[in-house]
Length: 293
Image 1 (cartoon, rainbow, N blue to C red):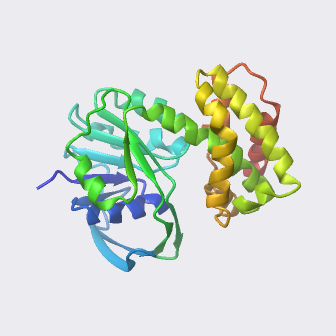
Image 2: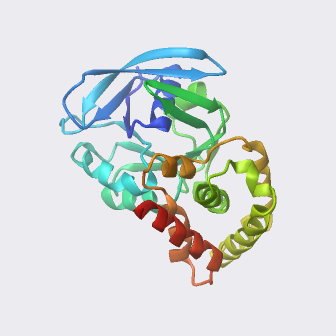
Image 3: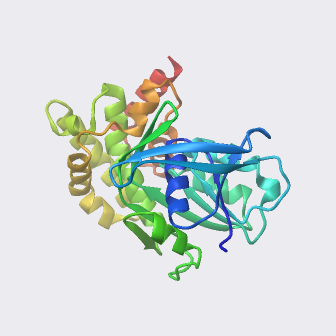
């Protein structure tokens, strides 16, 4: 029997991947803030499988038993605080997979769990909660990996079976930076103007989009990723076309009056380079004002 996966941060993506890992044959437990309840039912509605209801064991974060495998699906800015709550249960053998948008969580997780086995993941799968039901917006593509080895770990079998369109990356940081760059071009504009992704290719927002793409591409070049910079416009346009009817996660956060991942995405680029990013900085200022309001 495979070792159980614990999920920390059971929001939209956490609930989706609880189902996916379970479908892959893994035993899944949901980490909770309190000792109750002992069970939780998550109902997932998807095109692929229809409506599926599953009951998962719950595990209080304050318990003392070691955690073997941990999937963190909080927001990037919240990952550090969440991991602190279970740090006493981590060992050098603990496998940690951080899956969220942005880059801030990487530094936070490395600082809190330097001896554990760290992996990073990102997904384009969309999911939102409607009452007690999780509704999948599509299977998406999920990448997972590390920069330390090209060898796939044995625990990846659970993922291969349950997660559609999964790819292993031995250069995962490059993949995460590309995803952050695309998100920096798309998500803030949709959140500020409260539009679906496809509106960014239409006038007048298409002009602002091109300015932001140019700035982010310049930052990528400065950071040592000229190949990503060269393809950023085409990649961003393709993602927008593929997700034209989608509501970005950042816009969803704004609509639900939640803190966005702006600092984990835009802020990360602003902190990493001395390049002048006027448009990016203005987006960050506008989003900060919306959050504070």
